[in-house]
Image (cartoon, rainbow over the protein chains, first blue to last red):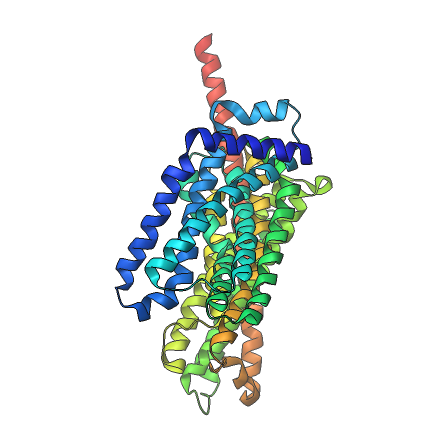
Length: 222
Length: 248
């Protein structure tokens, strides 16, 4: 399974390296969202600063949806997924490999986005390790749910409209917890952030486990 | 062909009719007791009458989603796999969404005079609203046309994802609120301590009446789904015959 995971992850990252979809389309999209929120909230730093964590996470959520759709469309076009299954890839390995690759891409996006948000919303990035831990755990949870729904809707013609409707309500705990840890980190209240980290960890663990178990049966439908 | 038989009545029809009758009598009695025969509350006045329908509606929502979860599990479990579980799951979720919507509406109607606002970010309210959207998504997913077996498996897994999410959402919202502001919101349930004997009985009656209504609606929706399925199969068979006739 782990060999399949690594192979799949390498393949997805190579596809990204060749096409640059995430870096040249999704990252600029996330930047646009952060700037638009700046316009919507007005230039007053007193209003911008408390909103920064929420804006950051909303931009990540929207980007995650695009990432998931991209990640699934790569497998669905030209019957690529059938090739993987014929090659004897373990479904759990496929899930974990795609998860790893997409988490990697999104973490890259989040690093850039956090710096940008800090600069234009006028906040100082403090409690570095808390931010890193929260971002990693939250991203794993987001991508796990996203991929689950992605494969669930893979064969459907309405996936572009249905995926956000299914995805956003389920990941609302990640948005709440992610925003809270960021607020705690920026205010240097590290202890309040720890409880939220646990919630993010539990959320990620639940949906990674569901993904490992159910990706096989769902791939058969796709 | 279609199993729609209006006459003579089968055993299932009789059960359905009896359930409907119980539900109707129960609801009429709840209306009578709730609006006429119980006294207004000492503090809340006539507003308290909402308590005879709001908690029973919420209760029905919970059993509907519980039923949806259990029947989805029954479908996923290889030994009990049967498309009827899937139809039951879909029917239950539909009724659940309707009742959750009514919970939100009646809650708002209560909230405006009692708390001075249509909406507060109270954990229970927020979770209920998310529950509503979660299962709306589930129903939208069910409407995506596909092979019945594929659709059933997809829906069952989506039902599990949604159901497991509910406690996580609840705790997240609970902590989210408790960190920011003290839970000073007036809780309608605390008024139970002042509840009059006839009020308690009316509330209990409300629970029974709405549960019977749920069972009746579930049964109708389930049978309708089964009929739709059969009609679809019949259409395909008919079309096949027509093509074969053309070929001759």
